[in-house]
Length: 164
Image 1 (cartoon, rainbow, N blue to C red):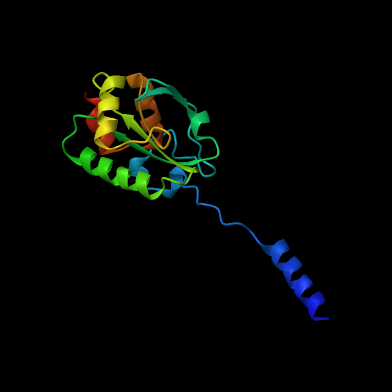
Image 2: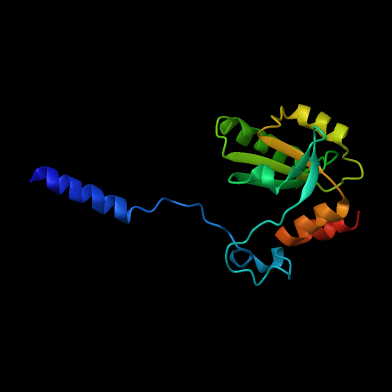
């Protein structure tokens, strides 16, 4: 009788068990001043559109590189002396903390692609001991990078860098 009770409890647990999912933050969940007007009506399952950029090794990087993974995305430039070194140090800590987790990656986009060539990104990657299997620093056309950023974030950051 006890065994039947345990089996019933187990079956009940398995039927009601729902694995935890990370919350997907949609544009409507954040400060409206930080979201492009094109994205303000996206209420569900916000996805990053496909892209084609080049990393610090000269390899092509697309959304396929991150399929089924969680990734931290940031925007920086190598000659930045204010917030970028702090972000780099924090991302270096993330890389170290998750070095054995194959499901988490980091994607850093330069907002100054005219200067941040592949060799410049490679030298910058060396400063932060970047593992290219875990952390990709990418460049590409200014239009591609700014379009990606504009559809993700809008605010003082974009206004400031649009002037470059």
